[in-house]
Length: 405
Image 1 (cartoon, rainbow, N blue to C red):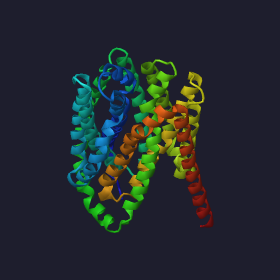
Image 2 (tube, one colour):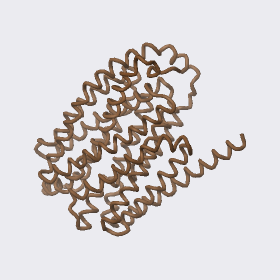
Image 3 (cartoon, rainbow, N blue to C red):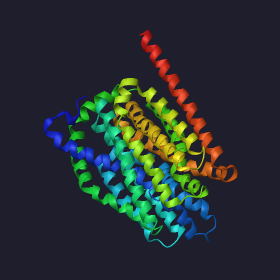
Image 4 (cartoon, helix red, strand yellow):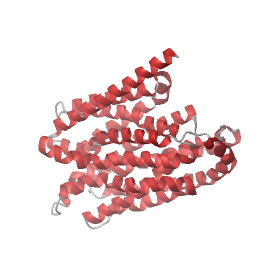
């Protein structure tokens, strides 16, 4: 199937689309981790509220709960009414709901605004991933998804660094960072305009192709979703719990979280540049094995002893490992998705990703309070080691089959 980007006169729009889609992908990291540096100060400012410790931590993961409910619906809408309009609606809602925490009067209303932010994330992420599947194919898709991870990580470095500075002034100011996506609207308006032309030009080819497409896509997508949810659940220990680990260890949680997550993002963004080449040279299973093993090492290092000379290298390892596996989830999902189901599959993967973020603080907070950080982080290292061994086994099996062929 010939994609529109192969036509020379459309190359200019490809650049606009790529920029718009890359920048929209950064909303995912902005949605949750941006307010992490402000969590301890927010908890202190609402200390009189019952269960403030749980509610404050849940501000980070609250959008993910709404994503779980809305993303599957957003996927169906993307397949039926178009992805460009859905993307624009999501960004507008993202700006309004995200920035509301700067001026809302109490913890309960802030929590409600975070749920609304989750609906915005569901719309934007589902439409964005599906558009990547529509507009890119093969090696170009792998390359774009690798660079998307680069953009997410480096933007996270900027967002969290800025939020750390603002949190030092007031725990409410980091919410103003959510106003930035309003700058994306001109890019997204152009994407919607061109999406219509592409769909009209290729609808007949896609329709004929889908008649012969495999009907087993849902089972494969469900397996990918399970792996995605488990990985994110463990990885999310970093943005949701690292401020409290630093506080317990005697460090300033606002600036310390900004530095630690900044190193994680910097390492991840740098490593993600290697994703396309590594997946082509060694295969996707090998990339997954390396990513999971690296995250296992990172969690083991970070709780070896509470000193910066171990915390920062541990965070760098976790960021590097996650930057290898994250684009792999989308590569696998878009590979198994028929063209007319890309929105639905994107919605399922988005749901799985954010389900992991919701489960993480609910599952680990009580365990952390009872047992401490070291047993929990070492358990995460053990789980990632098991996943690495599984991916390594798949790699060996694939190599054996290829040799026999």
